[in-house]
Image (cartoon, rainbow, N blue to C red):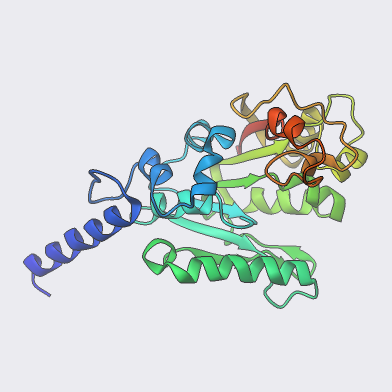
Length: 274
């Protein structure tokens, strides 16, 4: 391929992605974080949650850059993947930690299949995303040792405590990160005096407890942000955090009350591997 043809191909590729993202002007080396968040490839329902999840502020607090190798742990339906994948596509790399597609758990198989269908349906956005099966035998693997600049996880930590995999997952985070690499955590925040084992069943964890475990593994707390705080969240619901939006587990029962509260009170923490 001639130099002119190669340059033309790159320009056309950037133009196609720009149209997909719905941005007005985008540099040839990829979208800004704000452009990725504003992209029209994101569903209306997901974009409506930006007011509660603050993706630009949250990822900015973590210190993300488009040249990074980032591991996103268990993306669920891919809310943050919709932002991270186009942002990192041209100069960085996104790895998603997933369940084994052949897991004995029906929930894990269904979750993995749903994410795979999303990624496979839009190769222009997600074709470069790497998939890493996390649980391999008794081990948790997020990638080659020292290969990642950043690991991010959103609202997952209580599940790992409930399943007995809490420290194993965070030790794997430590292993995959380079020295100086960042671990960014967003997690439903329990009352300060809550029993972690009991609050985790409701979806919440005490902030000091989470920090203590991470520092025990070897991480250094680099900062806290209150961008995802919500003082209206009373954290005392019989059905846990899922009582609140977006799940609204009780349906129409006291719906206006829970919608008025909004999404959960969440800690947003940044750790660094020395």
